[in-house]
Amino acid sequence: MPRPILKKLSEQTISKFISLYHSTSTIGDTTKEYDFVSRNTQMSADPKQLEKPYKANAVTIFVFNKDKTKMLLIKEFRFPINNYVIDSPSGLIDGNEHFTDAALRELYEEIGYTKNQITIESTLLPSYSSVGLTDEQTASVFVTVDDSIKPKQNLEGTEDIDYFWVTHHEAKHFLTYGTLPISHSKNLGLLDEDNNQLHIGIASRTQLALKQFVDKF
Image 1 (cartoon, rainbow, N blue to C red):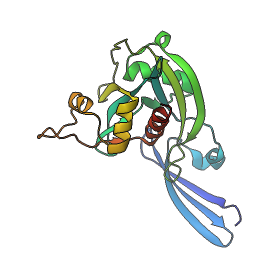
Image 2: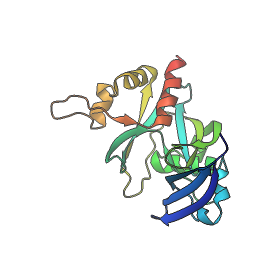
Image 3: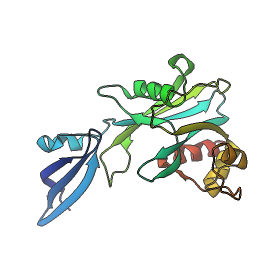
Image 4: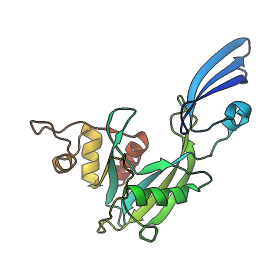
């Protein structure tokens, strides 16, 4: 099959964070139209921007204690699903900010750890988040911290985030059943009126990181 040729890219600005694009491409004698959302703006004037991999729009931070027997997770309210989700600390990159700097900033805001309390162990280059829907690319940063420190969050007014630690056993329970152990469910308000544990969704990157965390032990 010949490579599709982009013929037209139109843009509708939704907000300062999101643009809606409509592309028209030809594949041989066939025309293909496609809609997608983007963190990038003004690409209709320079469609070549679409073809650039490894350009970070956001960062996800995977946090472990020093001996890597625990992993830090957050419960966060997310408006696209009108519900809470289990995730790792994350956020958008500001301007030309390097993704490791963004990771340190987001950890301070969402959890409270300061730069000198964080050790960056490794990173992954930006990768596509949901390539059927958006060209957004997210970098991954793996860090360790001292879990005996009880940091104070520095959340923005509309952010609804609670953080907590899970052991390998607790992580395995969550991956298997979609519910957190009873102690976490109680502390995080994830019990119904009859004290039954509520299911809660999880972000895909965090789910994969939890699976690796469990499989190492």
